Length: 68
Image 1 (tube, rainbow, N blue to C red):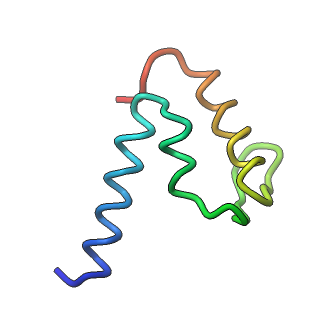
Image 2: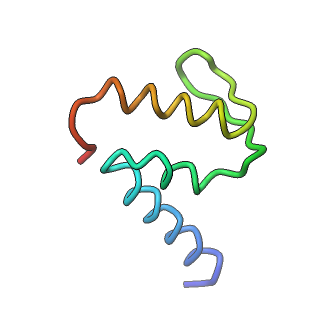
């Protein structure tokens, strides 16, 4: 396994560790502050980490219990 693959696997693992218990700070630590992202639900575009944080908070609020 090369260094890039190791880094990607580590970041995916960190994402899983954060998303399962709905750890918003852990999830957000994986995003750049000036991110641009697009989702499947409105609002479709997020420019900056604050918008993405609000989107994740909305997802977490809609789901009861942790992700499994």
